[in-house]
Length: 474
Image (tube, rainbow, N blue to C red):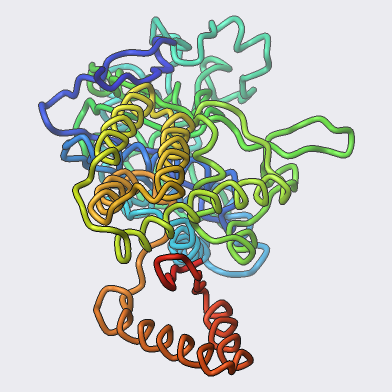
């Protein structure tokens, strides 16, 4: 089975075929930096972090770009409230963004373009749109896009122009030729940040920045464009129109959209998490209670396209489930260190099955929930082997090697501490175990128990077995 992706544009699951063999160009819409990121943002960030990681796992050379909208009405309004420069406000929140995503175990993108530093590319694209008759300037220095010149406008969101009009998705503005038209350049208003352009001082519309950044950094057509499903309309729909107009080509071959993070209201109904509804939870606050592994597991244990309900009880459930995987992982580490000699035996077959199940799950539109179930199935099987004392050191090492491989995609298993990567730590543990044994032999149980209890407080458990004392991290 080869990788298949649910393409929002075609509304079907399609085999993934990159534009250039062995390479993937991927763009994901980032955040508008006027406040801290919340758990709704984190879902998209982690979703596409895993998509990128899995593509790399398959051997693709991935160029991953995600942007910052650092020029926007919300930014200007917030900056005015605080009496600071809008670009200073957005710069401060970009710095905070990187501090917060570090708490999610996310790999950095290859490029983080910003609207404020992309003006030459944005203005060039607006020029192309105007020159080709898809855009027009108005007396206030704005430039609008002629929506009706795009025959299949609405294909991504699967709605017609008439449906957009009846749903009220239009902006009544006397400067427009048509209420459906949208701004690609906004003429300056008093007190706003601005840049010079052929149409006068102003700033870009929200949608144009992504089209221009994609064209500049990745080319006219890319493999994958991603974002939350709240961006399908109007943002992504307008991006498609702009690129088709300026370049005469397809913007992206595959459109991926993650489901919304929701919260339960007082009436028991779920609603999208958003700043406007004030029902959001900041990543910073959640990360103070739960580690990055638990947060990632919470998201990845549901398919990325499905809606997901947030609450502390949901996080605690995720934490408890992940603990079962961790217990198995620690037992495997102990077996790899202290287990019986012999070949990998039955463990090798279990790894082959788990690898097949993991790959099939991920190839099926990045189904992380099914991929995680493959890990739980492996944990159950290896726990039985260890219970029967049938797992060898070589077998445990084979399982751990597989887990390290797949966790390069998921990022849910604990990273090894440097002190455990050398023989010194093992030697210290052996000394403590021998000392405890000697104390017990001399009936000094109080001191023997103190060693056991203090090690447990430090995160290490001693287990008295028929084969002697074993230790593992908890």
